[in-house]
Structures are given as C-alpha cells and as structure tokens.
Image 1 (tube, rainbow, N blue to C red):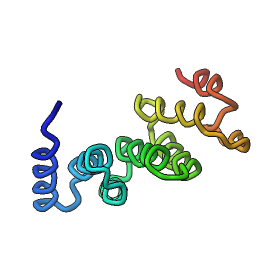
Image 2: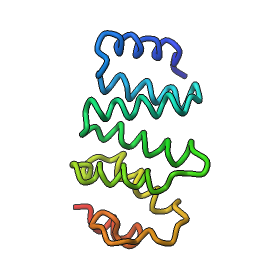
Image 3: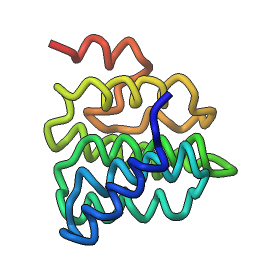
Image 4: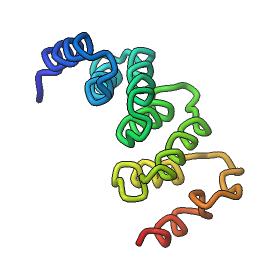
Length: 132
C-alpha cells in the first residue's frame, strides 16, 4: 500500500547524511527484507542500527525475525539471543519484543529451549506470568 521504493531512497539518503542513523538503518533493513528480499542487506542494516544504538529494541526484533523467517534453516538460537538481549535491556515493556519472543517460544522446534535463564521461563505461560 505504501511507496516502498521512494521510502527506501529517502532512507538511503538519510544514511548518506548520517551513516549511523539507527532509525533509518532499521527501516531500510525492513524494506530490504520484506520488499526487496535482500536478506543479507537487511541483516547488515539491522546490525549497523544496533551498533549505532545498542538499546534499539526495534532493530533487535527485526534482526530476530529475519533470523527465524528469512534464513533456511531458521537460526533459532541466534534469534533467541537477540530477543533475550532486548529483554535484558528494558524490552520487558516493548510490546514487539514480547510478541516476537512469545512467537519464538511457540514456533521453536528444539527440545532444549528451557535452559536456565530468567527470561526463558518454561513455556509461554511462564512468560505471561512474568508480565506485570
């Protein structure tokens, strides 16, 4: 519905003006992943956004989503690491982080998921119980 081509050009221009603009990098990464299907370019943007702003929950959520939904096979552990980092850095109040983490808990097929970690409760019920 939107004009992603022009938006991508605007984000690229913003990055030319300020190479470490976290929001522009994150949003360009989203376009690269979901519109252009440039997964490597998208991952690079998300990682650069996190280098520029390590507390960016949005960039971590997008990177985790890419790792699960755009990589074959899905990189479950890497995605979990990103989401847990977001939770540890204040993401408990960030709705997209919580939703993506809950989705990961439901979708992840590996049986070793419930290792000791305060942000990895046993199943979705524990995550829900941890929400204030």
